[in-house]
Length: 177
Image (cartoon, rainbow, N blue to C red; front, side, top):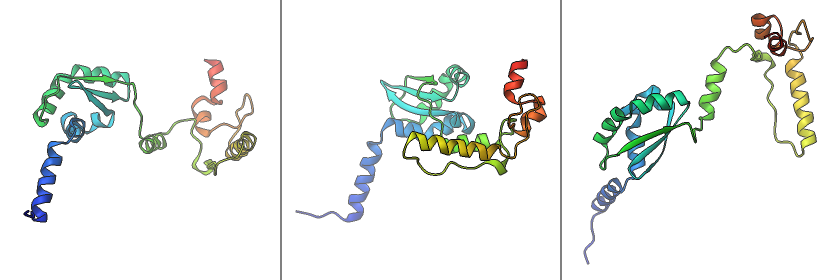
């Protein structure tokens, strides 16, 4: 019985792992290169079934645009993959946005209904029952709206951006429209 060196065994395992790498893993590896960083941010690879790559998109317009570009994307991906794909299907189904990215996008916007940073109080901890959860929500809502200006029509606390934009709160503005 002969023993192989540890280096030789590890090299054999690495080669075997590369050969057994799943097609979806390889597609994930080369996806951003094939479509670009902007498109990659609006897509998520879901699976490969019967040589068809299924991709979730952030919106229907992305799905439609990428459907028109699928032959070009297929050509780029198939150059990198050991077994070629026959098609790519794009859909908004199963799109799940990364929560950190979503929070960053929302916080970066200057939306008229956003609260000033000073009034952003977080809801703390979990509540044991619905009644205490409601009480905590009421308290947090009151804290947030305590220093907000009032709507001239309904006298409800209103984010300053809404008053700047419509001179009234969003509910009164919607009634006017």
